[in-house]
Image 1 (tube, one colour):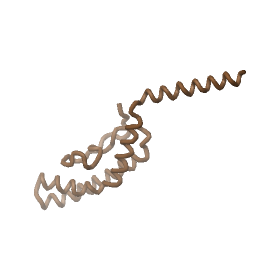
Image 2 (spheres, helix red, strand yellow; image 1 turned 120 degrees about the horizontal axis):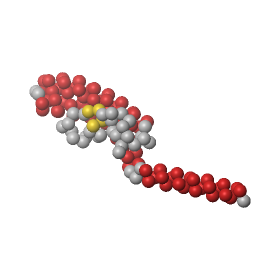
Image 3 (cartoon, helix red, strand yellow; image 1 turned 60 degrees about the horizontal axis):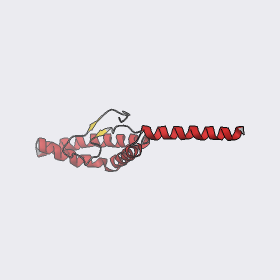
Image 4 (tube, one colour; image 1 turned 90 degrees about the vertical axis):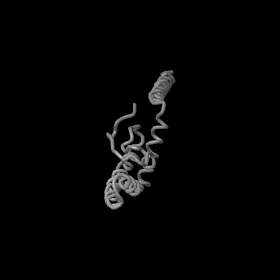
Length: 123
């Protein structure tokens, strides 16, 4: 008899824990999937920062400085995207804000990439 009471108690406790966890984060699955996807895309497409920065710098200045400055800026942003991609892939179970802004390299192509706070939880 005490074994069945213990089983019921453990089952009720597990059900309560699981329901409170799922209610606390309604978008957990979506947030984790977006974080993993952005991390993998940052690792695979970080090199797109080169043409992005060459084009943007050329549009702001001239062709000569646009190419030279764009290659330098593109190299720095490529390293930044790779680093943020590694962090996002390793920590994807934690639903945090994306490190790189814009989240994906192809979003807002004319906006320079910026990097925000690391491990800031989503609201």
